[in-house]
Picture 1 (cartoon, one colour):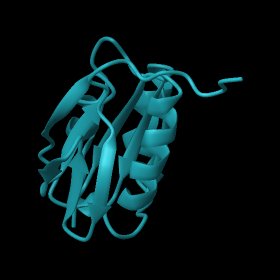
Picture 2 (cartoon, rainbow, N blue to C red):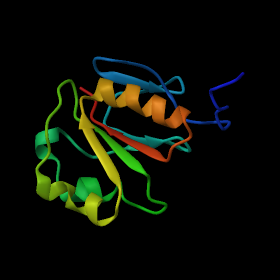
Picture 3 (cartoon, rainbow, N blue to C red):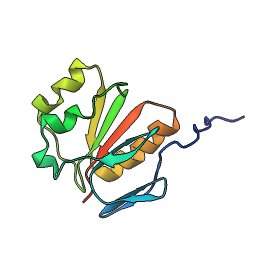
Picture 4 (tube, one colour):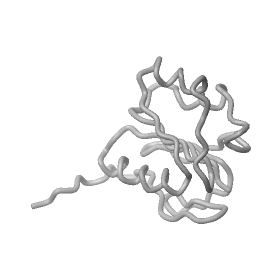
Amino acid sequence: MKLQPDLVPDTQMVSAYGQGYIDVNGVRQTAACIFGPQQAPQPWDVPTAAEMSAAHLDVLLTEPLPEVVLIGTGRQQHMLAPALLRRFIACRVGWEVMDTAAACRTYNILAGEGRRVLAAVIIE
């Protein structure tokens, strides 16, 4: 009996990660980026988690809205100010803030389940 669903062709998956990079479908990313199962990585203009603003998060909430947004804050988890996350609540979008390695692992699980997940990661 098969228990794991087939991935949609061209699903964007994290194929590797390490200090200073992540690979999405084998393509190396060395700067902060946003990607989803059907969205190839695109630049995310966030220098560090401490410098993250509401405008940086607003770009994550475009139509069609994801079910959940995973925010990777670099080598360490940095909690974001509650005021920055209010728009997620208003849009009824779940979010999780974690270090980038954990965000990559969690993203692959959710994308593999066919969920509408969006990853926004800072690469250090």
